[in-house]
Length: 171
Image 1 (cartoon, rainbow, N blue to C red):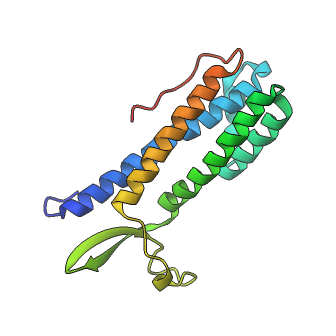
Image 2: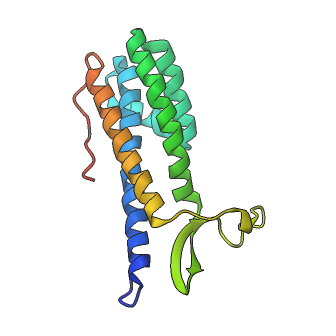
């Protein structure tokens, strides 16, 4: 950050960073759910190699879902997983916006307003059709990430014989 940067830009950058950091707790909890589901191997380094060999988060989620459908014998646990999966997919959309959109500036009544939008150089996007995402919108995503991570941690705590490696986010 520069000293002369407008407060709105500083707030935007802070919201962006905080929201993206919040997403990390969701990815950590996805690994822990995967770890629980395949725990007979009892070797986290082997499971880590398997889990992280899938490069996209979408592929990891699909893998976990397939294992959950096979492994979760308690209908209540499976129902809870399906509910969480819907929330994960919604929040994944927010995460993808953070990962793939760019900081742009828009003028509103003579005031510069930072927004998260597709790059101006992306010719595949009709720029006039996308209003962009504000600092306030990212704050909502951040809160949604925090709530989802908390729900996932509670789900992990309820599963029988869950190894005690739950990682809590500092955010």
